[in-house]
Length: 292
Length: 292
Image 1 (cartoon, each protein chain N blue to C red):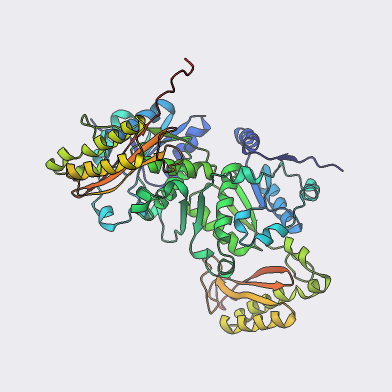
Image 2: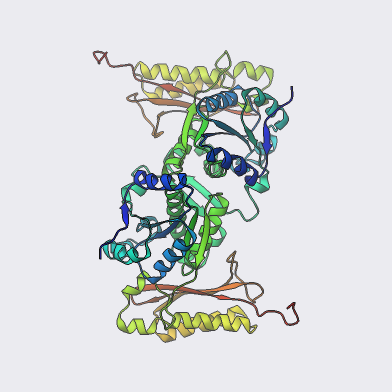
């Protein structure tokens, strides 16, 4: 079976396709990726195909969002396998620009988002969310997409992109798609490929600990106690370091101690060579005696 | 004579107009202003009318590009007079959003442009060009304009906007329009309103000094000597302080000492309560013995 996806590498080629679609009144969805595709990405493509007449998958390993050169160098690059995986899902275009197309030598612009980008991964990966905000804006401008699809697995990233898109009045709708997980709860991630078999056995402990925090919040326990226990639990399971486990308001990412509205429990921890991140929602129990 | 320009205050109203125009295949031009219009702004509107089927003039005194609260407070606001002045030029829409529309309380995004924003006014007005880049991107996204018109009077601003638009792949063409001057050479500026009659007599000395630098460059003299003389000349004429007089490469704004390609001579100086800026081009003499 050979792939029928058109691969384009330049902005001019990309705009050629998009201009034709828009002239015909077709809606355009974009799924930004860094490649090394897994079922989590494919769920984004499926969501895009359901919502939009045309779907562009972008593939660009964005150097500006890597704060460590070794992490950038090690990041898996599997374009041919990515194309094979995408084929059955039928996106219209795979847009895989070169580094020179995205960042010519004269490039000098940075987009920074305050508030939601602070703390959590923002505290551990300096410049990371600037790099994300900048490349995502460029991809929005290049694709002129009407709708863009991002995984909830990178939950803070999703909120940074929502904030930026709203602040800059970019005419694109942001859709968050729930995290796809292995049967044992491990969130799918391109970085899971770094895990040894033994580490793979340990990995679901991160998700288990976050779920336990969410349950404790629903039962009325305070976040500070629950997250301290979770960090101990994750270390005890065999992770070598925990960057954070925190409870935040779902939309603004402001720290909270008690569950009042919708919250998110977020964690990041190191297992061997991999830095794994995950998050789960926590909703207050419906108040007794409410309507319905 | 009453004005027939439609004034809109919300993004939704603005997009209602633009969507209709785009559906009909009409090109859209935008002239961003902070109001207090003078013949320099009207030249931008004229240029836009010549190039585009539809023209939007925006009027927003952008707080993010004022680094001093007193300067923001004193900036002239003359919307009704602006509308009267615009009427004969026939723009389709005057877009005058409120502060809350542009910067709701949750606003948290900043666009920074390196390189061209450094030195010159960037060195004297910290944060100014971030504020310009951020608001101009918002106006581009709100208006969805195909072409945008800016005066060369704010030459560094023009280069910052060109760089940012190119870096972010915003699908808008940037057109620079030559500075409009009084008969004695003074560049038109909303800030000229701050000058007393006596200061108004002194003001053209800035332009005269910059022109003399340009002439000296063409004759082969070094920039450092010429700009030092110009600063002395401007002070001697009665300006109370000179922020800078510099010679830069026209496109990149890199400092240069000798005229090789197209250059720009830029200056900023204080006269009473007004900080006046100006700039003039300098082109090398056509080489003897060339073609033609």
